Structure formats: C-alpha cells, structure tokens
Length: 374
Image 1 (cartoon, rainbow, N blue to C red):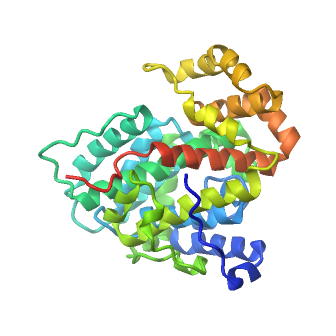
Image 2 (image 1 turned 45 degrees about the horizontal axis):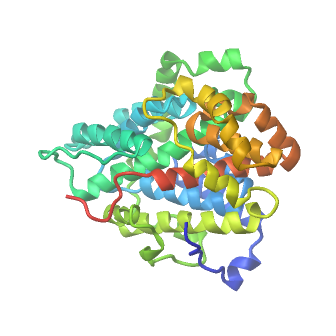
C-alpha cells in the first residue's frame, strides 16, 4: 500500500482517544439494530477493533455506510448476503448475528421483494470465491444487477470477510461467551438456530424501527474532522467502490489510508518488520488446499521456508501467525505462536496485529471493485 494518509487537523489532535472511542460507540448504538450490545465491552465483532481508535472508527464507518445506509440493495438482501458469506467462511458468531438480523428484517419489512436478491446472492458467492482464489469474476450476461448493485455486493463481501476472519480469530465460536461471559455450554443452546428464531421474534418489535429507518449516505462523517474525497488514494482494484456511492468510496479510502498510518505509527518499529509482511504476501497455498489442510501447510510445509527467509525466531513466529490469520483464523488461539506473541507484545498489540493484517489482506485480495465494470 502506498502511504496516502491525510494528516490530522489541530482539532482532531486535541480530541483524546477516549473521547473518539466514545463517539464511535455512540454511533454504533444509534445506527445499528444490535448497537446497544455491539457497542459495549471489548470482545464482540465491532469492539475488538477498539484496540486502536482510528481502526475502530474507520471500520465502523465502512460497515455503516455499506450495511446500514440505503443503496441499490434492500436491507434484507444485505443480511442474506452476510449470512451466505459467513456460512462460506465458517464464522459461527457472524452467521448467528446476521441470521437473527435477516429474520428480523424479513418480519418487519413492508416493501416489495428485492428484484436483485437472487442475482445478488449468486454474484456474492462469485466475488467471495474470486477473493479466495485470485481468479477473475465471471458475470452472467443476463444479470439484473446494475454496476452500482455489483459494487455494493462486492463491498458487503469485503466487509464481511474481514469481520468473519477477525471474529473467528479473536472472538471465538460463541458471542455470548466472549461478550458476556455466558458459559459455553449455555451459549451453544442460546445460539442454536431454534433459539435464534425465538429471540428474533421477541426482538423484532424493539428493533423494527431501526430496520425500517432510511439512512442517507454520510451518517458517520461526524466521526472525522477531515474528508477524504480524493479517490486516487485507492489502488485500481478498489476504485470501483465509488460506483456504490461516493460516501462508500470515501469510507473505503479512509480505511485504506488508516492502514498505512497504523503500520507506520504503531507496528513497524519493533513489532512487525516489513520483511515478515513481504514473506507472508508471497506465501500462497497450493491450489486446491482445503481449509482442513491449511494448518499442515503452514506448520509443516512452510517451516523450512520461514526459517530460511527469517532467521529471527520471533519473526518466524509472527510469519506463521499471520499465515494463520490469512488462511485458518479459527486456529489462532490454540497456537503457541499466538501465546508467544501475546506474551511478547501484550494482548492489545497482539489483537491490533491480527486486525491490521486481516484488513490489509482483505483489501489486497478484494474482488469485484475494479473501476470499470460491465
């Protein structure tokens, strides 16, 4: 990524990180249907990003502008795409949360059916597979999706892929356990499909207003003291985000710029050398490697390559950890490399490392957002 971060203004510098974090949490409460829950604590899919104030508000802005704001796709369609992506990525926490939101949005929606739904789901799966494999997207000639709708689908896949990866790595399998300390056995029952359906029915009257609300682009602008309106800061494979709306392009540009800032100010010195990042970038699993084979590929087949490229043992441990972030995130908290990283850097920096690399990896491999689309 090129360094393209906009320098903060004096007003921005005068606001403490605590104040900024509080503003972000309030924004989540205001605009997201489960915001009262998702704005508290440190261990849910949103608040895990609060280890860095800039990461937190930039990710929330990208999520809100993509998922909450009206666009070419209706809210129930977005939730169905999120369920599909979470299922394909095997992220149980996100799958449960979006299944609940899908159920609620289906119950309270009074609009006609979304004509884009079927093609949107087909395109979402195509984008996801292309993001994982690096191949070109095949768009059916008879698709009903406009270029705006295609870009919106691709943004949803991008946002959800990062969310699935980091939630699997840092939150775990049961949201109730991570966020509220509910015993895992109880949490599994609470989060079963049947229980989720019951909870959805109970919550629908309380969340209906948020689902029905129509939000205009720019709902998160007040979190920022500057406006990123130069989309040239985005690499060519992401510039098509503006096809889904200017504010969505701005939100993605902010996120992209924040990645450089976070690395240069918090990670580059003594935490994550560029040599480690470059090594992981070049380490691509053989075609056809299944999710179940990723651990063996990283720990067995890549061991000699890691040792040869990175003589320092700490750097070797980081390289293995980041490969797991990229390709097998559910395994992270069982790794000795994770324990070593937490012990050496502290839990906050270890989490930031995972979050930063996941977003960077997701942005680098995003599909469906090229500037020119049919």
